[in-house]
Image 1 (spheres, rainbow, N blue to C red):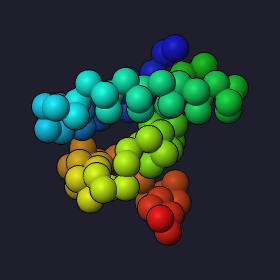
Image 2 (image 1 turned 180 degrees about the horizontal axis):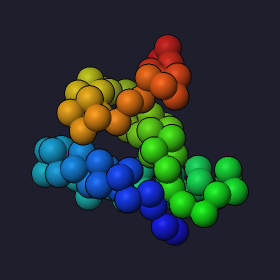
Image 3 (image 1 turned 90 degrees about the vertical axis):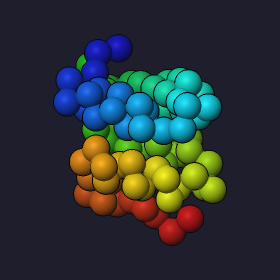
Length: 87
């Protein structure tokens, strides 16, 4: 599935900033979920909202503080999508 270019760039940058031992599994899990999210919305490409939703559903709670820091570092505005939701 195609990705919005800016979203893909931000996601890849975010992955590159993760601890090495988390990168592969995070990239695979979030990519699959983001593509699933886009398919459920019946759109042709993965967009920022799909990635943000995937991150919040796939990243384990103990890693939320790292995830939030990385989202802010790469300028992925999770707040405009209603995250973080009381978890």
